[in-house]
Length: 87
Image 1 (tube, rainbow, N blue to C red):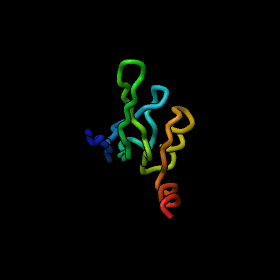
Image 2: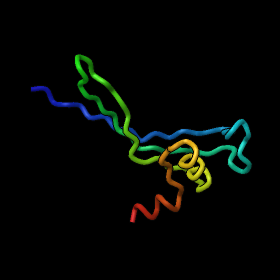
Image 3: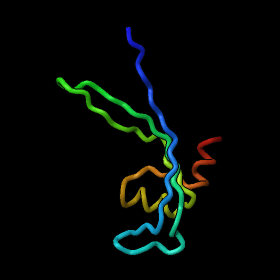
């Protein structure tokens, strides 16, 4: 019997000069994002389908998290939300 493999990742990204509707966002020029994710796969018909599940996406400013949730449907957490959930 083969032991299943499990893959997870804690990834750090640096965004430089992000834009929203082709306009740069004042005071939010460069920021980091950290996300915790794990990788999944399932059998579909005769092929394996692969995907990524994001557990938590963290950004350093609340405004970034609000824009990401409101306009892109991303479940980002700002710094105060991350602390509240950790308690």
